[in-house]
Image 1 (cartoon, rainbow, N blue to C red):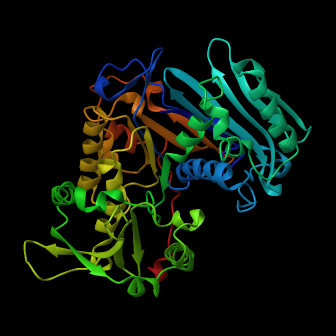
Image 2 (tube, helix red, strand yellow):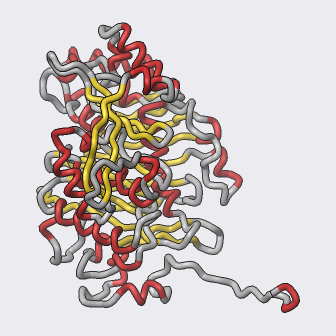
Length: 454
């Protein structure tokens, strides 16, 4: 479970700001908390703020940090350091994730000079009354520290070699290198077994912006989940009354596919033993191609691989089929969000920027309420940014599930929790928020128009 995220010197964030998901002393709605040995964690967080306050920048920071871990720095933008001070261009930016795993909490983070694409430091620490460094490295000095007490000597010697080879590498992070093709290091349970778990938890963070898709595969579209998927769609009053699958040929799809998908699939079909190419073919996959939603089911035993176009009937009228591209923007947006409600994967973290984009206020409210019900039974987390004031109801949300981001007079974003205001649980906070009681709302300047131009 994600227990916190911190960022500094990134976009509108100058000094380090931290989102803590450790629950406060609120007693209401405690069933949807994750209970660790020493504390409880929130499974939901809503971030409010005016336009351009930094809400999206905070989520961009999480996305940037994930991409840094899995892709290195070569593809990252070199312009995303905080420009509020000229010196920030040459200063390292700070990113840190905190995860709680089996009653222990770990901090994994790194620093990077964004303008140069150069990682300077990286660390993994077990947090506690006395923090325990699992490993740390400083690529500028060529130094590294690995806690040799955690493993047998032969394993410690091997890891020492990996670190020695990597100590001056500045365009990628070592955590992925310590996991990929290193299964032998983790055959025996030891103090370093947490390293691949941290990487897997980072991989389980799915982030969506208003015009991007949440998750890659939409496995809820599989025929096995069709009844649940359809019932969920109906509950959101989309007008969709039935889902139809029309089988299509691979050649029909390939001609319109983006080149990166087409090459992987073609290579996988030509050479099924090619491990790299099979990555595109060994799991369920959905593709939106020119307004057509295709569903790929991988080969299972004697069952051949198949491609289907997903079509929809509306309002109980059979035979009249609508493609995905003909659906409303709100319905398309909902399709991306449904993975939050329908995914069965444990310990997933979903982060959605502007969840209310293209959605009716009541639909946004209903979606969040459905998630909060699910969170009582599943270990899944949802972090959203939003302007939807109807959610600011302490009968729906806990005080500690609400956060605000606001810019100061220098244009620096600051994040703060709502529960610092110590409001009563029965306070009507929506009106107070809109009146600016908690910050996070726009402040308008008067504009006087020339009467001749009005």
